[in-house]
Image 1 (spheres, rainbow, N blue to C red):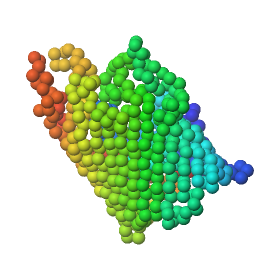
Image 2 (image 1 turned 180 degrees about the vertical axis):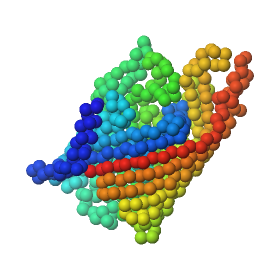
Image 3 (image 1 turned 90 degrees about the horizontal axis):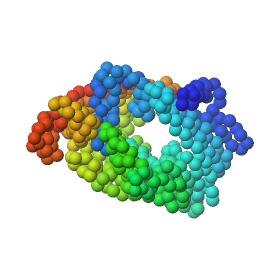
Image 4 (image 1 turned 45 degrees about the horizontal axis):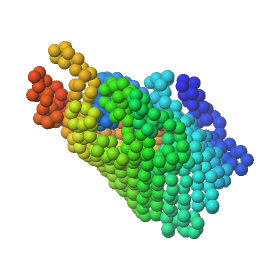
Length: 469
């Protein structure tokens, strides 16, 4: 891992400062590129909130008290990301290889090395495109293109059909249509038949039936005035997903609960208005767990509205997000949990003083009902070990203000400085029926210890850099 990361970083520096990034090979061109992103981050407090499903409620609330660490929000939300990409194009064929290293500064031995390698061929006068290999998200063929920009990646074969090419239609008038399917190869170690009589996971090799059952079907229509697209990602396997992951409960492998066939089926969609070049208007959604909505379903909806005025210098806008859950863990924990909607609105403004210096301001207001559950073993007041302790927090609102400054020193290197003050308010869940047994038991527990948390204010400061070449 260490050698892989160092090789990426050293090659990135050499490629970006010394050698040419394009090499002619026959009739084709081999191009090298990459990115290095990191930053210095300080967080005044350590308040990580997670849902019982393991999803972070407040993903920006990281860091220990007074702790300075390497981290950046804008590109990756990891201490350091280093990319190295090689792309070869020869008329209607090509391939791309990418190496990526994440988290290498925190722990070399646990650095995540992500690799992508795939090739493509344009056929029938560019009316059909075949792409095969380990495909990443850079093509964004059927992605939602909004604030979330959701897409599907993985190992397999993707077929795109562009019917307007067959009729030589003018895209400036008729637009463009792209539809097809992505046959995703499931992992060979993914259990897909549950467990045998002894509780052992049953594995099965990859075959055509399993691959077809993991297919993603998508389309995008792009008109000069608007675009619209969607993807349906099927799921036919029993996936190796532990519903307790991230909740803190330690259970044996034989007792783990796996996602059933169809549970991970998802739908992504996005629409946008593109008629006015200074106007940004998008809406998108990601629906997960369609095969079992009550137990595994959730939805993330996002909208963006922005407009640029004063000779393309001043941009005013607002982003909105609605998080909807359908999780129901009553079969797996003592207290039923119901996660209800959370909404957030984030107005923002940017002013381009010069192309190199762009100050901005972002504010946000989130409200709703989010629940944080803990299944960690603990010790009660009388000294007994209580493996069923739950601590729930109802987050009532979240308000933040975030001034920021972007400095673009060249076409490839940029710095971003920001300060963020966040006010978080919590409500009391003590009267919730889920805690009735705690109040009425022979040994009553102080419910306030489970259901109350003082409101707090957080301060965060960051200086980030992103270098592309």
